[in-house]
Length: 250
Image (cartoon, rainbow, N blue to C red; front, side):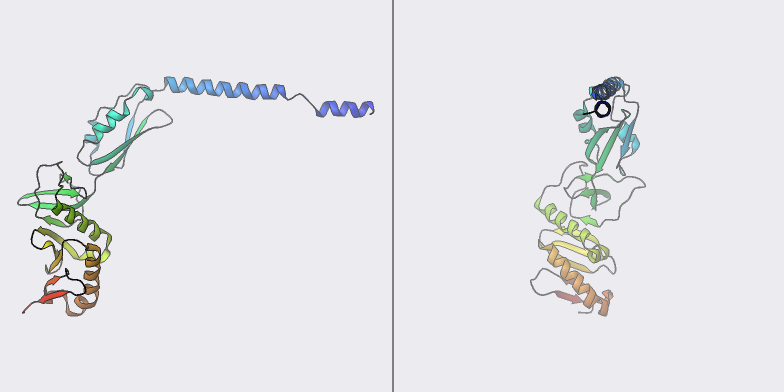
């Protein structure tokens, strides 16, 4: 090997250790800086997302500490307080990069408006009664046959389970949702509904609501569209393989 070749090999094999040491030093400084920032940052602001029925004033009544390090907060206790609010089903708290808190609210969704005499309250699919909120209405059927009080209590009877199943199924079916405006529970006939046009009585009974609503939609598309809904008095959908109707004048 010549001297020139030896010099070239020496230059190409420079010692990488100073570069590695420099990178480790920079990484170490970043970690220390991050730990220092994490240890010294404080919560200055609390923000809310996902609430509609629950007002900002209601949410702000829950005491969330500010001016303290996020790691010192009892999140489980704060979440429990949020979930005591009427419409709050779940609350989740996350810490933003600047140390502030984001509270994500998941609200209960009304499936009907219970009408109990002069008292009217919303109810969700789990049977939790919910107060009406001024200026924040929702387009859901009116439900009869259940008590409107006490608020916050849960309807857990078999009757309400039938009603909840019916109402949630109606919500998923476009034609049924557009044609049914009032729903009632009776011990004798189960679920009875009224159409939003002409108040035609629809008898759905107790259970099998997906099929019975499908039959109603087929009947509505084939018969009602031809004869007109004003010709009908009642439609009984409880029987397998047949629909029993009663027309006006009969």
